[in-house]
Length: 306
Image 1 (tube, rainbow, N blue to C red):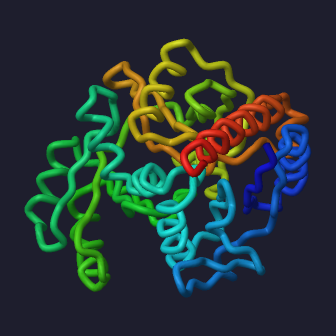
Image 2 (cartoon, rainbow, N blue to C red):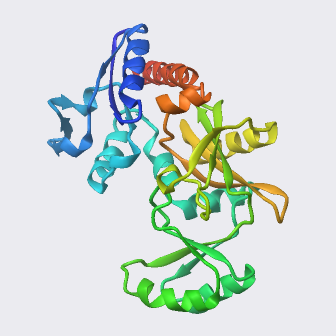
């Protein structure tokens, strides 16, 4: 069987080398790759999506793996394409993981701990104030979409909330997503999962005088071994959301003495060359798992269209 898959991977932080490893691994299985298929450069007409002279629907699969450059236009075409050919991640699961409220709501309904949350209408100031009282005077405001800690604000008193409300009222937001601020040690677990398998783990440490562990917010990476409990929670969370590739972020709630899933990332980065030097050695396992996933998905696709 000869198949053709399309790839769009980030190129910085060692991404270009990872892409080449994937291309080589897939070629050994008689799967050819077209790279650089950035849907930013695409257009659609007559029932087809064209990107860099490639008719996307002619591909056997499309892997989209670039968190930092996703526009609404690209996601719109990604959704349309996923209705025609396999995509990794599948669009429905990816869109769910991008929404923090919907993800937390789903996980909670299946018994997986997340921070206590509240979704309030934009004009529900009573609900906002009730939340901060119920949670001991501290909460976190988060955009329901976004990544890297952008737009996240910690509110530590009702007075601070009163000062923030006039600004929020001038935004075009329709609702507010709030979470109880969790007492933790300013470190987290990032669990990498591919195709229902545990791939690797690392920790992130918030910078001094801060509480956000995201690398884009100044957090630093360190080698960390997870317990079986942490891995099991992450596997269940990724399966519930339906992601083929997932990075599950967990912290330990010291007040309630339990692990909590903060969010699930649908495009978890590979270890950078600098991080590999620290001892993060899961990249080869991740490439192999993704290669196996692509091959199986392509075979399944071929069987359907044959």
